[in-house]
Image (cartoon, rainbow, N blue to C red; front, side, top):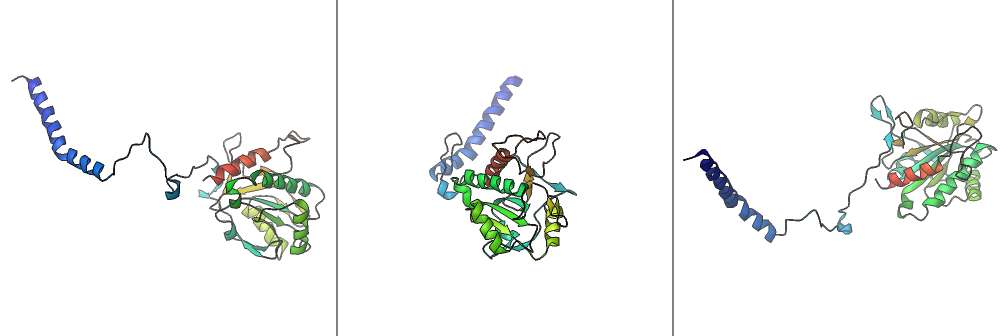
Length: 248
């Protein structure tokens, strides 16, 4: 017999064996409705079939570890104790300011209010927040912060204006915890915002060199577009990145 005939016989034997072993199992699965088709699969939202979409935002990595928000405990404008755990499950912005600041703080908080208003109509609005830490806790009491919040139009219940016992704990939190410059001795601070995801990790876009930006410029408004030094506004960018993290 020719070799080709042996090949045909071998193939036929394999097909017969497959039919004997697997066809009954396939028929049984079809009867039990265990077989689905990927091409036209329907999704049941009530059973949470949809998967979360991971964003491409970077983590801040230090010594090989993703940097997470440190533990903190402060009093907000309503006299309530707020800790880092209250923000878990929320995407939030962090700023450092003080209520009597006449220069960059009003601009920063107007920009934060504009972000608040842009996100107001989203279904995920309840999962967005702001943590505004005062660098002058001696004078920025909860009552003072409450008046300040009302004057600026703070409506988000997850926007907490926070005051502590000592300016030194604020110094450590800002410079070490969030990598945002604050000099509590001279009442100086940057106008930058940090962005935190739902799990409490610091996140941001990449810069032109492929590294995490770490923070976002909070002083320049969308209307201004660019400042006198040629720096472009990053509020639009920040809103886009908040929306991205809300979907994770």
